[in-house]
Image 1 (cartoon, one colour):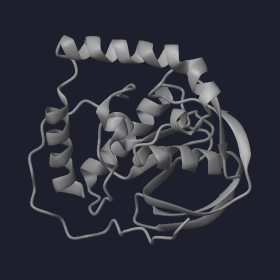
Image 2 (image 1 turned 90 degrees about the vertical axis):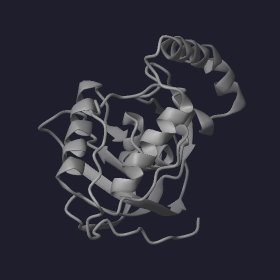
Image 3 (image 1 turned 135 degrees about the vertical axis):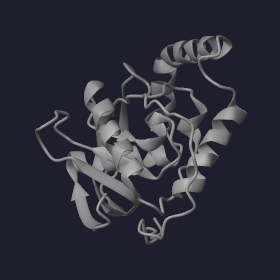
Length: 215
């Protein structure tokens, strides 16, 4: 895997833009933002810090251990983790502009996703990786990790690249969950037909507005 240094998150503020009121909710497959390749963050302000706090709230409420920004319909290259999955326990981690490199080994583990609730499958991933990123305070993260942390970082970084864990499973496993994914697709189309989910063009326009402000 080629190495790319992460882009800094500490830049002078851009011109202020009034963004539409936004309610943070975890979106479900096959929402198009889940396939959107997130953009590096170049500005951290109080609004972004509040978004991160809200992401932790949503993650805990959904009983997850990680959540990527595009899972809450935002275009930022950012995700949050707490391997304990419980507020007040474990360590809350924020990864801004993560870059994963130096994969080693191989390990299989059953994964699920807060954007495909109830669907699980075994995924094969490198057992060890190197990660570079920034935390919310602008401090550099530069670490070699393994075990559950490595798996979680890879899962969430995949999200930022528009990749879902179901893309990484074998054909027999895909066939086993095909019916469940079709159910999600039917629910999505029904929600869109009733106006609860905007059309793709409107979604992309809103993502671009956030990119203009933060990326």
